[in-house]
Length: 117
Image (cartoon, rainbow, N blue to C red; front, side, top):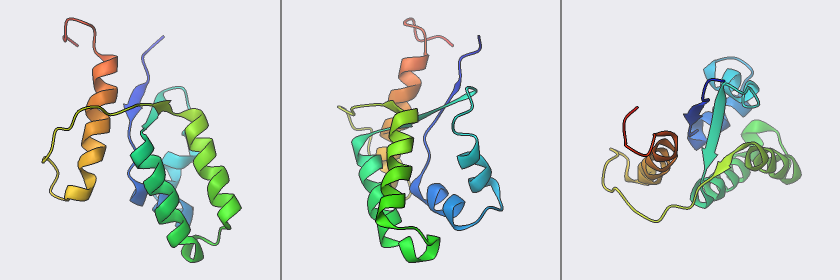
């Protein structure tokens, strides 16, 4: 079996996919349960998903309960990571640095112990 692609999804992609059924963001959300991909999350990312989706809930026509169900579904499908180190600053947008931390953490778990791909 092929190792699934490890992905980290930024909050704006989730929001865009819930706003419209057109485009790549919606397509990505529709294949999250595909075994070729494995979504990765951290507590910081989940808190951001919840905060932004609830703040923008008028745009996406969802209730707080709907948003909770979506976030819980993502949590169910995802690999959960605790981030103990910080690679900052790396991103042009400092608010996205935690996404780089998460991406590095989940990539580290997919590499063989000798560090070679």
